[in-house]
Image 1 (cartoon, rainbow, N blue to C red):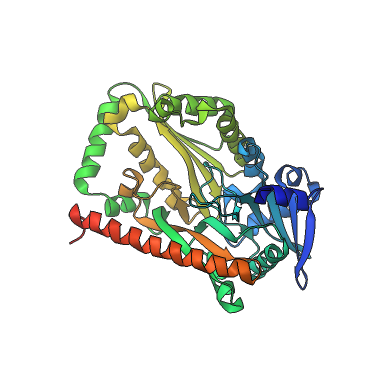
Image 2: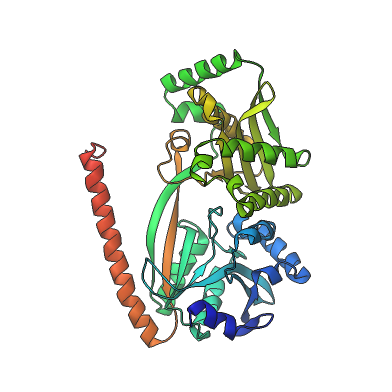
Amino acid sequence: MSAGQSVVNMMAGSGIAFSALPGAAVELLPLAEALINADLAVEWDALATSASEPNPFAERWYFEAAINVVDGADVRLAIVRDGGVIGVMPLIWQGRYAGLPIAHAQNWLNHNAFLGTPLVRPGCEAQFWGALLNWLDASNSGAAFLHLAGLNDGGPVARSLLAYCTASGRRGAQVHSEQRALLERGLSPEAYLEATMRGKKRKELRRQQNRLAELGQLEFERTDGREGLDGWIDEFLALERCGWKGGNGSALDCADSTRNLFRGALHGAAREGKLELLALRLDGRAIAMLANFLTPPGAFSFKTAFDEDYARFSPGVLLQIHNLALLEREGIFWCDSCAAQDHPMIDSIWSGRRAIGRYSVAIGGPVRRAAFAALLAAEKAKGRLRQINARKIQKANGILS
């Protein structure tokens, strides 16, 4: 029997609650069931508004869309309560880790969710982790450890996880980290661009915009999605599919599940007043498009696409220059690019960086914890070797002095 199957059998029914700490309890509900729980909806939405770290990919409206890509997996929402809800995080049990048959519990992220930080009430981070980890200790699920992907390394939730492990004598560590572009408030859009981009490059972009304007009427559009959203979505899906993502089958429109996720996520964000849509149009037709999620005090660039027939004019970069208006938007102090590390386009415009990491934490009794200690030591050694090899490659390419 797989780890996932054992959890299903153990938790058959509407959910299971376990008193993890005095005053704290953990409840696991199937994700589909959690999404139709009216009482939970009120507390979940309130938590999202006041969480110690904003994360649109952990909000209820996003999960209502993400249910389209669960693909039969047994995703459960872990709800930690102390009087009211103090934290929520989706969990899944996996049978393999790093290509090896190692059962473990993990926070659930789909391929179009770019942050795995759970929503936690400010000041309750340690209580959240303590309750959840103690629950996992007693769950008899067969999981060897808890793996957490996509946490904001510098945020209070990840910091509290490591602090709690140290204070309680529980082994846990960050096993991987990467940097992605971050836009941070402090300068006007014009001053920011001047500080981050060479004058020669700025001049070239002005030239490209002028040449583009010679081809027709060039317009920039910014909306909140409250009107004409389905048309905007159809246009974006078609634009993305015409590019390289459509060619390799990774465009959102290449599968019903991802198409429905995108449509549902944008409708959910618009309904909550958390959507911003940008488009660069030539004679009314979009040649670059961008969807942002607004979750004060931050924002997240969810998806972007551009018409590759106009690549010589850099329409995606031109649109990102308009996107710098986020620097002056009330209540928004930073924007996460949600881009891969070393992204060639956004890294050249946004100078800030945000570290996103993966963490592994021991759970269970002495036997499982001893096995985890050996696994963690091997993973750390592998990580150090990976860093050494990366530096050798950089040095060989003349990146390092």
